[in-house]
Image (tube, rainbow, N blue to C red; front, side):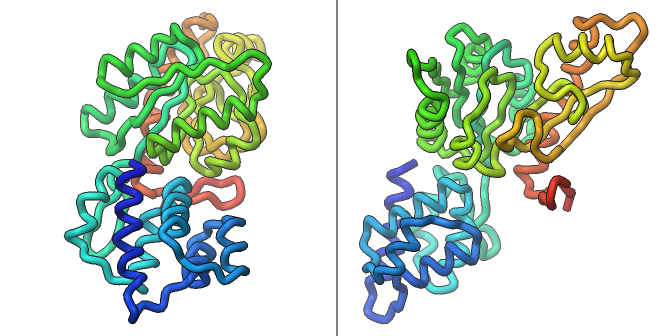
Amino acid sequence: MRDELKNLADLYYLKILSPDMKIDIHSLSRIFSDIGIYDENIKKLANLNAPVSREVLYYIFLKAYEVDKLHTFLNALSELVDVDLNALQKFLKPLGLAYVNGLFKKDLIKIGVLVSGRGTNLQAIIDAIENGDLRAEIAVVVSNKKNAYALQRAKDHGIKTVYLPPKKDEKREDYDKRLAEILHENGVALVVLAGFLRILSPWFVHEFEGRIINIHPSLLPSFAGLYGEKVHRAVIEYGCKVTGCTVHFVDEEVDHGPIIVQKCVEVSDDDTPESLAQKVLEKEHEALVEAIKLIAEDKIKVVGRRVIRK
């Protein structure tokens, strides 16, 4: 990925060096501002009126890529710089981009799935992709548990896996920085928590802001903070007649971010935590795939706490 990104940046750099080009660090900083990318380093370089070196331009491309706005950046940059489209086409697909009808667009959204257990929700995503119901690519599956069966599911389908155990006395943020490095290296645009039994640090949430989703086995905000059979036992003991699952964006609070999709099931009088878990799990598979599809097809926007379909 990094080689393609460097080569793409170099195509633009050579064009920017042309005598008739008037692209400077201020132009690039304005593009970042216009498309909603804030980067303190670029602001400092603009204040210093620094030259646009090859290294600076690559950093700009890398930053746009990491926040999943490379296509938006290229569209804005193309209004100022003309580059041979034939020359850049070969670099686009590895970066998850395509050039269609005069615009750069995301091709297949690259997903990083974080797991700790059996991976049935992971399997639902894999099945949806292989059946053609979901235009996405699972770039990597990461687990904090060595024996998580989800890793084997991924391997069975030729998907890259990484076992990432926490180090002794390692701070949560330090673990998350190692995790983020793996996700960035694999070009992940959307992080999917599919039974990942770790609470993400505020640093990680900020690093992938608006690009992390989680599946929770209740109708949030009810029974937030519980997991596994504890949720279903609490639902039964409370006397709920309806329960279900929720896919939501992740923020710094547990089970709290804006809700994308919810699915409901009835709670029967003879339900046990085990039987209720199975009913909810079937809806989890549907809800998670639906949420990823909405994001991949850019069919939602977040307004306050509301996720609105376009």
